[in-house]
Structures are given as structure tokens and as C-alpha cells.
Image 1 (cartoon, one colour):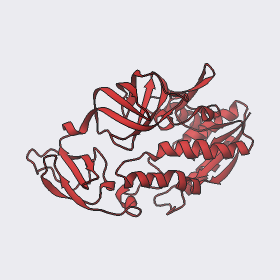
Image 2 (cartoon, rainbow, N blue to C red):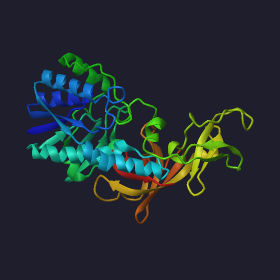
Image 3 (cartoon, rainbow, N blue to C red):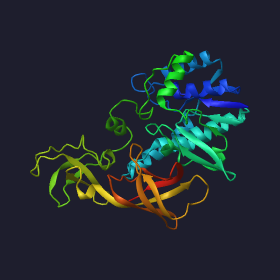
Length: 354
């Protein structure tokens, strides 16, 4: 069948295209450009990524098309990203990008090209069960990306292939090397293109106003001034501007709370301070892969990507969900996603509110 593969220039999507070509499919590569503002080589690697994608497509023997989704990205992802930061939350743009760009704008474009399926280099799997599609974790536990894909729906999953989802990263690199793909040793991209490797606060500073206010301990002692609540996140340790000596023991300071109504930043000493630990969270805008909420009951969940699964109990509220954990979770952050699992199956999740 005809499959359009989202090729980023990295090794994972290149091997995804290679494997599909070897299976006998008609494969077309599609390179997505999602950012134009300040798109220079110092921070954003778009130009080099396109060169790498084209070089890999040439070795594989497939055509590569470049398509510009910058306008859609700015409207659907970046605007929401800024809105969330302005509201004092810490959003995850990769989750939104997958739901709105990679599996919506890209999917629509691929269908117009006559594709029957699209494919990406994500480490996840799709299985069919009782006429429904399940989103499963990738076999490489260290690379599993189902967390970022939890907002995909049945219509999207029915058209998606994840060719490297059953492989370990080391196997993907080995396949690329043996096939002579020029990007077989290219390092993994981190973060999001529009920020790149630049200091995050410097980037936000260009789009969000600074509204300084007091930085205090939970007891009300003023330690200094923050530059604006949008520029901090729960659990942040570096860049707060408070040394480890004030307050006695010399333990490091962490951001524990952002009080929007009084514009106060609450900081605490010590990694395991009680204000940094939560056994219960609430989340809004729940999205379920199956199209309907799972039964209430015991599952496991993550409140951030790089985190071990935590045992929990799901409770369904009117338009929100409540998640009770067996053990306290560290630095639960409003704006991030809580994602629920039933064993290998990713059920979906919601946006943490408190």
C-alpha cells in the first residue's frame, strides 16, 4: 500500500521508511517544517535536518517532499504554549504537536496525496482488539514515546504505523548502519525546534512580559524577588536566584508553588520537602484512546515523560479526572499531562490542574 512517512532527518524515522520499503510498500517521505521565526542554524537545525532526510531518502530509494506547517503550528501549538505559560502553567508542546500537527495536519496532507497509511519513527505500537485500536508502549522501555501520543484517537490510530516500535534503539542504529544510512550515528534531538539549545528563559522573554513579585518561603519570609511566575516551573532548582545558605542547613531551594492571585513564588529547601510531594492530582480535558473513559479503578500513571510508572486509582468526575497515587509523587506540575496505563496499554490522560 502507499505509506507516507514523516521523516525528520533522524535515524528513527529513516529506519521506519527503510523497513516499510523492504516490506514492499510504496513509500513517500515527507519532511515537516514547523517553525519559521528565528529559524537560524545557531538554535534550530531545520536546514541540516532536511539535508539529512534527503540523504537518507536517496539511499533508501524513495521520494521526499518538504511541506511547511509553520502557520498551523503557530496557531494550534505555539499560541496555546504561550497561553499556558501566561496562566502560570508549564505546558508540554510535544503532546499538542502530535495531536494537532503530526497526526492531524500531516495525516490530512498524506491522505490528499493518496496515502492509505502514515508512519513515523515513534517508539510505540498499535494493536487491534475487538474492532478497536490500542496504543501500546514501545518495546524499548527507555525510549517508549506513548506518553507523547496519548491524545491520539481511533481515527488517527487506524491510519498509523510505527515500524520501529517493536525494536530497541540499538537495533535501529544497527539496521541504519548496515543499510548505509548516513544518519545512523546522528544524536537524538532533544526539546522542541523553536527553542533548540538556547536558554529557555531567554526565549520566553521575547514573548512574555516580566511581572516581578516576591519570592517567599511557605512561612512568609521574603527571600528576594522573582522575575515573573511564567518563567519558573514546579520542582525547578537552577536559576531561582536563592543560594543554599539562607534558612540554615544549606540544602538547595526548589520552586514549590506559584500563587497567581498574589504573584508570589513559594520556594522550599530540600528535594523531599512535603510541599513538593503529592498523593492526589486533578486533571482536565481528558482524552481517551478508545474514545470512551476506562472504568474507574487501579492503573499506573506518569506525570512526566522521564518517570517510572506509579500505581494509582483513577476516579472519573464530571469533566475532569482525579488520580490517587499509592505513594507521593514529586513536583506534580499544572499544565503537564498525567497519562494512564493498563499494563502495556496507554489509555489516555488529561492536563494537570492541581
